[in-house]
Amino acid sequence: MSRHAPILLMSLLLGCLFAAGAQAQTTLKIATLAPDGTSWMHAMRDGAAEIETRTEGRVKLKFYPGGIMGTDQAVLKKIRIGQLHGGALTAGSIAEIYPDAQIYSLPLLFRDYDEVDYVRGHMDDRLSQGLKEKGYEVVGLSEGGFAYLMSDAPIRRVEDLGNQKSWLPQGDQITAAIYETVGISPITLPISDVYTGLQTGLIDTIGSTPTAAIAFQWHTRMKTVTDIPLIYVMGMMIIDQRAYRRIDARDQRVLNEVMGRIFAELDRQSRTDNRKAREVLAAQGIEFVTPAPDELIRWREIANTSIERLGTRGVYSPDMLTVIRSHLATYRAQARAD
Image (tube, rainbow, N blue to C red; front, side):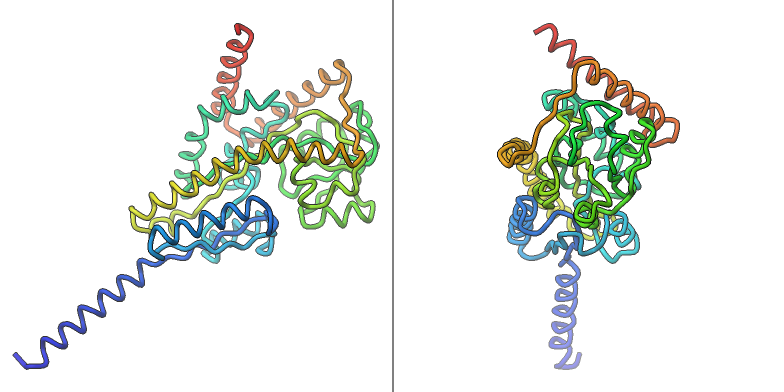
Protein backbone atom coordinates (compact mmCIF):
# COMPACT_ATOMS: atom_id res chain seq x y z
CA MET A 1 0.00 0.00 0.00
CA SER A 2 1.30 3.45 -0.82
CA ARG A 3 2.46 5.53 2.12
CA HIS A 4 -0.05 8.17 0.99
CA ALA A 5 -3.01 5.74 1.19
CA PRO A 6 -3.82 6.33 4.90
CA ILE A 7 -3.82 10.08 4.32
CA LEU A 8 -6.05 9.71 1.26
CA LEU A 9 -8.42 7.40 3.15
CA MET A 10 -8.64 9.82 6.05
CA SER A 11 -9.40 12.70 3.66
CA LEU A 12 -12.18 10.69 2.05
CA LEU A 13 -13.68 9.82 5.43
CA LEU A 14 -13.55 13.42 6.60
CA GLY A 15 -15.14 14.51 3.32
CA CYS A 16 -17.98 12.03 3.79
CA LEU A 17 -18.51 13.14 7.37
CA PHE A 18 -18.55 16.78 6.30
CA ALA A 19 -21.06 16.04 3.57
CA ALA A 20 -23.27 14.11 5.97
CA GLY A 21 -23.15 17.01 8.42
CA ALA A 22 -24.05 19.47 5.69
CA GLN A 23 -27.00 17.35 4.61
CA ALA A 24 -28.24 17.19 8.19
CA GLN A 25 -28.64 20.96 8.31
CA THR A 26 -32.13 22.05 7.27
CA THR A 27 -33.53 25.57 7.00
CA LEU A 28 -37.32 25.57 6.89
CA LYS A 29 -38.78 28.58 5.10
CA ILE A 30 -42.10 29.47 6.73
CA ALA A 31 -44.49 32.18 5.51
CA THR A 32 -47.39 33.82 7.32
CA LEU A 33 -49.76 36.77 7.06
CA ALA A 34 -49.14 37.60 10.73
CA PRO A 35 -47.61 41.08 10.83
CA ASP A 36 -44.04 41.43 12.07
CA GLY A 37 -43.89 42.67 15.66
CA THR A 38 -47.02 40.82 16.79
CA SER A 39 -47.06 38.36 19.69
CA TRP A 40 -47.36 35.54 17.14
CA MET A 41 -44.12 36.49 15.41
CA HIS A 42 -42.24 37.09 18.66
CA ALA A 43 -43.31 33.69 19.97
CA MET A 44 -42.52 31.81 16.76
CA ARG A 45 -39.08 33.41 16.54
CA ASP A 46 -38.40 32.49 20.17
CA GLY A 47 -39.36 28.93 19.32
CA ALA A 48 -37.11 28.95 16.26
CA ALA A 49 -34.14 30.13 18.36
CA GLU A 50 -34.73 27.34 20.88
CA ILE A 51 -34.98 24.73 18.12
CA GLU A 52 -31.74 25.91 16.54
CA THR A 53 -29.97 25.75 19.89
CA ARG A 54 -31.30 22.35 20.91
CA THR A 55 -30.53 20.80 17.50
CA GLU A 56 -27.06 22.40 17.49
CA GLY A 57 -27.89 24.30 14.33
CA ARG A 58 -29.18 21.32 12.37
CA VAL A 59 -32.69 22.79 12.12
CA LYS A 60 -33.34 26.47 11.46
CA LEU A 61 -36.58 28.27 10.74
CA LYS A 62 -36.68 31.35 8.54
CA PHE A 63 -39.92 33.32 8.68
CA TYR A 64 -41.51 35.51 6.04
CA PRO A 65 -44.16 37.54 7.93
CA GLY A 66 -46.72 40.15 6.97
CA GLY A 67 -47.78 38.53 3.71
CA ILE A 68 -44.51 39.26 1.89
CA MET A 69 -44.86 35.86 0.22
CA GLY A 70 -48.40 36.69 -0.90
CA THR A 71 -51.80 35.43 0.15
CA ASP A 72 -52.27 32.11 1.91
CA GLN A 73 -53.22 30.62 -1.46
CA ALA A 74 -49.95 31.90 -2.95
CA VAL A 75 -48.04 30.46 0.00
CA LEU A 76 -49.61 27.03 -0.50
CA LYS A 77 -48.64 27.12 -4.17
CA LYS A 78 -45.04 27.98 -3.24
CA ILE A 79 -45.00 25.11 -0.75
CA ARG A 80 -46.15 22.70 -3.44
CA ILE A 81 -43.33 23.71 -5.79
CA GLY A 82 -40.74 23.68 -3.00
CA GLN A 83 -40.07 27.43 -2.85
CA LEU A 84 -41.36 27.40 0.73
CA HIS A 85 -41.48 24.53 3.21
CA GLY A 86 -44.43 25.55 5.33
CA GLY A 87 -46.69 28.24 6.63
CA ALA A 88 -48.54 29.53 9.67
CA LEU A 89 -51.94 29.80 8.02
CA THR A 90 -55.62 30.05 8.82
CA ALA A 91 -57.58 26.82 8.85
CA GLY A 92 -59.80 28.27 6.13
CA SER A 93 -56.83 28.52 3.80
CA ILE A 94 -55.53 25.07 4.72
CA ALA A 95 -58.94 23.72 3.69
CA GLU A 96 -57.60 23.89 0.14
CA ILE A 97 -55.45 20.89 1.13
CA TYR A 98 -57.77 19.27 3.66
CA PRO A 99 -61.37 20.59 3.73
CA ASP A 100 -62.08 19.44 7.29
CA ALA A 101 -59.32 21.72 8.59
CA GLN A 102 -61.98 24.45 8.75
CA ILE A 103 -64.63 22.37 10.53
CA TYR A 104 -64.33 24.54 13.68
CA SER A 105 -65.15 27.62 11.61
CA LEU A 106 -68.66 26.64 10.57
CA PRO A 107 -70.96 29.58 11.40
CA LEU A 108 -72.30 29.84 14.95
CA LEU A 109 -71.07 26.31 15.68
CA PHE A 110 -69.83 27.31 19.14
CA ARG A 111 -71.66 29.44 21.67
CA ASP A 112 -68.65 30.20 23.86
CA TYR A 113 -65.04 29.29 24.56
CA ASP A 114 -65.96 26.52 27.00
CA GLU A 115 -67.53 24.63 24.11
CA VAL A 116 -64.45 25.31 21.99
CA ASP A 117 -62.11 23.89 24.63
CA TYR A 118 -64.18 20.74 25.08
CA VAL A 119 -64.42 19.99 21.36
CA ARG A 120 -60.80 20.80 20.59
CA GLY A 121 -59.69 18.51 23.41
CA HIS A 122 -61.37 15.67 21.53
CA MET A 123 -60.67 16.64 17.92
CA ASP A 124 -57.37 18.53 17.46
CA ASP A 125 -55.41 15.28 17.05
CA ARG A 126 -57.90 14.08 14.46
CA LEU A 127 -57.39 17.21 12.36
CA SER A 128 -53.60 16.85 12.62
CA GLN A 129 -53.84 13.24 11.45
CA GLY A 130 -56.03 14.26 8.53
CA LEU A 131 -53.40 16.75 7.36
CA LYS A 132 -50.62 14.20 7.82
CA GLU A 133 -52.47 11.90 5.44
CA LYS A 134 -52.45 14.77 2.93
CA GLY A 135 -48.67 15.13 3.20
CA TYR A 136 -48.32 17.86 5.83
CA GLU A 137 -47.05 17.80 9.39
CA VAL A 138 -48.94 19.99 11.87
CA VAL A 139 -46.43 21.34 14.39
CA GLY A 140 -48.76 23.82 16.08
CA LEU A 141 -52.42 24.77 16.41
CA SER A 142 -53.68 28.02 17.90
CA GLU A 143 -56.95 29.85 17.96
CA GLY A 144 -57.38 33.26 16.44
CA GLY A 145 -60.58 33.66 18.42
CA PHE A 146 -64.15 34.51 17.50
CA ALA A 147 -64.75 36.74 14.51
CA TYR A 148 -67.49 39.38 14.68
CA LEU A 149 -69.14 41.61 12.12
CA MET A 150 -67.67 45.12 12.36
CA SER A 151 -69.09 48.07 10.47
CA ASP A 152 -69.42 51.83 10.28
CA ALA A 153 -73.19 51.48 10.85
CA PRO A 154 -74.99 49.31 13.44
CA ILE A 155 -76.11 45.86 12.31
CA ARG A 156 -78.96 45.04 14.70
CA ARG A 157 -81.11 43.06 12.28
CA VAL A 158 -80.26 40.68 9.46
CA GLU A 159 -81.71 43.20 7.00
CA ASP A 160 -79.18 45.81 8.10
CA LEU A 161 -76.43 43.74 6.53
CA GLY A 162 -78.03 44.21 3.12
CA ASN A 163 -77.37 47.94 3.33
CA GLN A 164 -73.63 47.47 3.86
CA LYS A 165 -70.70 46.91 1.51
CA SER A 166 -69.32 43.75 3.02
CA TRP A 167 -65.87 42.26 2.61
CA LEU A 168 -65.48 38.62 1.61
CA PRO A 169 -61.98 37.21 2.27
CA GLN A 170 -60.46 35.68 -0.82
CA GLY A 171 -61.17 31.96 -0.94
CA ASP A 172 -63.44 31.99 2.14
CA GLN A 173 -66.21 29.55 1.28
CA ILE A 174 -67.85 29.67 4.71
CA THR A 175 -68.36 33.44 4.82
CA ALA A 176 -69.48 33.32 1.17
CA ALA A 177 -72.19 30.82 2.10
CA ILE A 178 -73.43 33.08 4.90
CA TYR A 179 -73.75 36.05 2.54
CA GLU A 180 -75.40 33.85 -0.07
CA THR A 181 -77.96 32.69 2.48
CA VAL A 182 -78.67 36.28 3.52
CA GLY A 183 -79.00 37.17 -0.16
CA ILE A 184 -76.33 39.82 -0.57
CA SER A 185 -73.29 40.15 -2.84
CA PRO A 186 -70.07 40.86 -0.90
CA ILE A 187 -66.85 42.34 -2.29
CA THR A 188 -63.96 39.88 -2.51
CA LEU A 189 -60.55 41.22 -1.49
CA PRO A 190 -57.28 39.75 -0.21
CA ILE A 191 -56.39 40.73 3.35
CA SER A 192 -53.68 43.06 2.06
CA ASP A 193 -56.30 45.25 0.34
CA VAL A 194 -58.83 45.49 3.17
CA TYR A 195 -57.49 48.65 4.81
CA THR A 196 -57.36 50.48 1.47
CA GLY A 197 -60.89 49.24 0.75
CA LEU A 198 -62.09 50.71 4.05
CA GLN A 199 -60.29 53.99 3.39
CA THR A 200 -61.80 54.42 -0.06
CA GLY A 201 -65.28 53.27 0.90
CA LEU A 202 -65.14 50.23 -1.35
CA ILE A 203 -66.16 48.24 1.73
CA ASP A 204 -67.55 49.32 5.09
CA THR A 205 -68.23 46.01 6.84
CA ILE A 206 -65.78 43.25 7.76
CA GLY A 207 -65.66 40.04 9.75
CA SER A 208 -62.69 39.97 12.11
CA THR A 209 -61.39 38.99 15.49
CA PRO A 210 -60.77 41.98 17.78
CA THR A 211 -57.00 41.42 17.79
CA ALA A 212 -56.79 41.19 13.99
CA ALA A 213 -58.87 44.35 13.60
CA ILE A 214 -56.36 46.24 15.73
CA ALA A 215 -53.24 44.57 14.29
CA PHE A 216 -54.26 45.53 10.75
CA GLN A 217 -55.63 48.93 11.86
CA TRP A 218 -59.08 48.12 10.47
CA HIS A 219 -60.65 49.26 13.73
CA THR A 220 -59.81 52.88 12.86
CA ARG A 221 -62.53 52.74 10.20
CA MET A 222 -65.14 50.97 12.37
CA LYS A 223 -67.90 52.36 14.59
CA THR A 224 -69.81 49.24 15.68
CA VAL A 225 -69.36 45.55 16.45
CA THR A 226 -72.27 43.12 16.22
CA ASP A 227 -71.68 41.07 19.36
CA ILE A 228 -72.36 37.60 17.97
CA PRO A 229 -69.44 35.10 17.86
CA LEU A 230 -70.09 34.38 14.21
CA ILE A 231 -67.08 32.21 13.31
CA TYR A 232 -64.29 30.63 15.35
CA VAL A 233 -60.94 31.30 13.68
CA MET A 234 -58.12 28.79 13.91
CA GLY A 235 -54.50 28.91 12.82
CA MET A 236 -52.03 26.12 12.16
CA MET A 237 -48.34 25.84 11.39
CA ILE A 238 -47.85 23.15 8.77
CA ILE A 239 -44.68 21.77 7.16
CA ASP A 240 -44.50 19.85 3.91
CA GLN A 241 -43.64 16.24 4.68
CA ARG A 242 -40.95 16.27 1.97
CA ALA A 243 -39.00 18.83 4.01
CA TYR A 244 -40.01 17.39 7.38
CA ARG A 245 -38.67 13.94 6.51
CA ARG A 246 -35.25 15.37 5.76
CA ILE A 247 -34.93 16.15 9.46
CA ASP A 248 -33.46 13.53 11.79
CA ALA A 249 -36.10 11.83 13.98
CA ARG A 250 -34.54 13.27 17.16
CA ASP A 251 -34.70 16.77 15.72
CA GLN A 252 -38.27 16.22 14.54
CA ARG A 253 -39.21 15.56 18.16
CA VAL A 254 -37.53 18.80 19.23
CA LEU A 255 -39.33 20.75 16.49
CA ASN A 256 -42.72 19.27 17.40
CA GLU A 257 -42.21 19.68 21.14
CA VAL A 258 -41.05 23.30 20.98
CA MET A 259 -43.56 24.52 18.41
CA GLY A 260 -46.34 22.53 20.05
CA ARG A 261 -45.59 24.31 23.32
CA ILE A 262 -45.25 27.72 21.63
CA PHE A 263 -48.61 27.35 19.92
CA ALA A 264 -50.26 26.15 23.12
CA GLU A 265 -48.99 29.35 24.76
CA LEU A 266 -50.28 31.35 21.79
CA ASP A 267 -53.62 29.63 22.26
CA ARG A 268 -53.86 30.94 25.80
CA GLN A 269 -52.42 34.34 24.92
CA SER A 270 -54.81 34.78 22.01
CA ARG A 271 -57.79 34.55 24.32
CA THR A 272 -56.30 37.12 26.66
CA ASP A 273 -55.37 39.40 23.77
CA ASN A 274 -58.86 39.24 22.28
CA ARG A 275 -60.42 40.12 25.63
CA LYS A 276 -58.10 43.11 25.98
CA ALA A 277 -58.70 44.09 22.34
CA ARG A 278 -62.45 44.21 22.99
CA GLU A 279 -61.74 46.58 25.89
CA VAL A 280 -59.57 48.74 23.63
CA LEU A 281 -62.28 48.91 20.98
CA ALA A 282 -64.90 49.89 23.57
CA ALA A 283 -62.55 52.49 25.08
CA GLN A 284 -62.15 54.07 21.63
CA GLY A 285 -65.89 54.55 21.38
CA ILE A 286 -66.75 51.58 19.19
CA GLU A 287 -70.27 50.41 20.07
CA PHE A 288 -70.96 46.74 20.79
CA VAL A 289 -74.44 45.93 19.52
CA THR A 290 -76.29 42.90 20.90
CA PRO A 291 -79.17 41.82 18.65
CA ALA A 292 -82.55 41.04 20.22
CA PRO A 293 -83.33 37.38 21.07
CA ASP A 294 -85.57 36.94 18.02
CA GLU A 295 -82.76 38.20 15.80
CA LEU A 296 -80.33 35.73 17.35
CA ILE A 297 -82.75 32.97 16.37
CA ARG A 298 -82.74 34.28 12.80
CA TRP A 299 -78.92 34.31 12.75
CA ARG A 300 -78.86 30.69 13.91
CA GLU A 301 -81.31 29.74 11.17
CA ILE A 302 -79.05 31.45 8.61
CA ALA A 303 -76.05 29.62 10.06
CA ASN A 304 -77.78 26.23 9.84
CA THR A 305 -78.86 26.86 6.25
CA SER A 306 -75.32 27.92 5.37
CA ILE A 307 -73.88 24.78 6.95
CA GLU A 308 -76.27 22.60 4.93
CA ARG A 309 -75.31 24.47 1.74
CA LEU A 310 -71.62 24.00 2.47
CA GLY A 311 -72.19 20.29 3.06
CA THR A 312 -73.78 19.78 -0.35
CA ARG A 313 -70.69 21.42 -1.88
CA GLY A 314 -68.25 19.13 -0.10
CA VAL A 315 -66.70 21.92 1.96
CA TYR A 316 -66.56 19.52 4.92
CA SER A 317 -67.19 15.80 5.38
CA PRO A 318 -70.58 14.85 6.86
CA ASP A 319 -68.92 12.36 9.22
CA MET A 320 -66.73 15.09 10.72
CA LEU A 321 -69.75 17.34 11.33
CA THR A 322 -71.58 14.44 12.97
CA VAL A 323 -68.65 13.86 15.31
CA ILE A 324 -68.29 17.50 16.29
CA ARG A 325 -72.02 17.88 16.91
CA SER A 326 -71.95 14.75 19.04
CA HIS A 327 -69.22 16.25 21.22
CA LEU A 328 -71.17 19.50 21.49
CA ALA A 329 -74.33 17.64 22.48
CA THR A 330 -72.41 15.74 25.17
CA TYR A 331 -70.89 18.93 26.56
CA ARG A 332 -74.20 20.84 26.55
CA ALA A 333 -75.97 17.98 28.32
CA GLN A 334 -73.27 17.95 31.00
CA ALA A 335 -73.46 21.74 31.34
CA ARG A 336 -77.25 21.58 31.84
CA ALA A 337 -76.82 18.83 34.44
CA ASP A 338 -74.39 20.97 36.38
